Length: 101
Image (cartoon, rainbow, N blue to C red; front, side, top):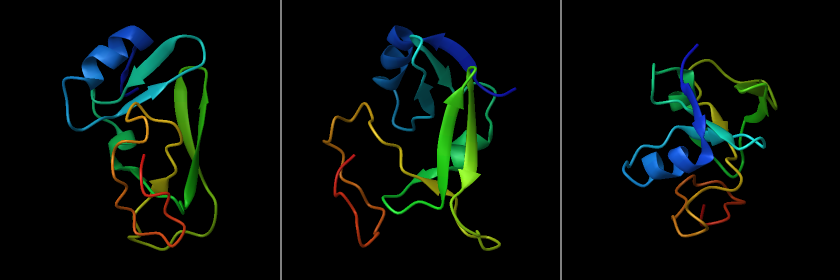
């Protein structure tokens, strides 16, 4: 299994020290740091018009397609709320882009 389960507090400390973030928080006060034992989480990019959705449960992150995905098409997911608090400019280019994450 890729990633490390840590507390949300530790996750937020780590996020503050890096530019590339592969962190997913769970509702129980824990988070998955996907930068430890690198895994496929690092290949899913944000889009306001995604082709997958993310399911978080049992300290795992699963992605499901929202439509047929073409071969070599980038996998995308709407990250939803992020630690950026609406301050990071979104560059997804979708027609319905929210402009910020």
